Amino acid sequence: GAVLDIDLATVREHHVDVVHRLRTAGIPVSDRRAVKLQRLIAASALLNGRGAANRTDLRVHRYIWDTDEQREVIAAIVQQALDGAADEDKSTAHPRSANQDAPIADELMRDLERLASSLNDRCPAEPTRSVLRDQLGLLAGRCQWIVDRIQREHVERRVGELWKELGTGA
Image (cartoon, rainbow, N blue to C red; front, side):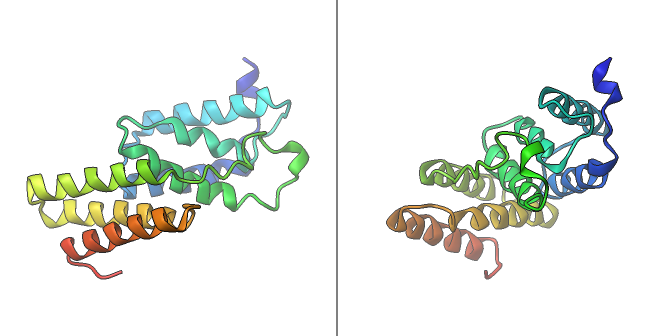
């Protein structure tokens, strides 16, 4: 009952934007799941003692992955939404919203290799190639946050190779 009393008006537009960006990146988010996510956003606000949700509650989107290869893509999209919440009152922010969750080079390479595998195994048609390019763009954006320079350069080289295979320069 109390979850239904939480005001979602201030985050509804941001929630819709995150869902749209996830769908564009090839992450299936049904309308039903999008509605359930609103309840989770409200629950996050409630658990943090607020009567209204704020953008830091959008963090719940991070946990909707169905497969391991979706995790980094989803994390990057959600982190962009959370980065935009920097101007919100820190005293009401979700406690984990300040955690940048820097990518781990091994996990990023694993996700790049899965993307490469789907590119090579299926010889995908252009719509699928477009989704793969979107996913690669999101993964490439995470490279800059790898702390270790040698690991970062190694991952960035692999990203460059995959851009060439996809027929797109970046």
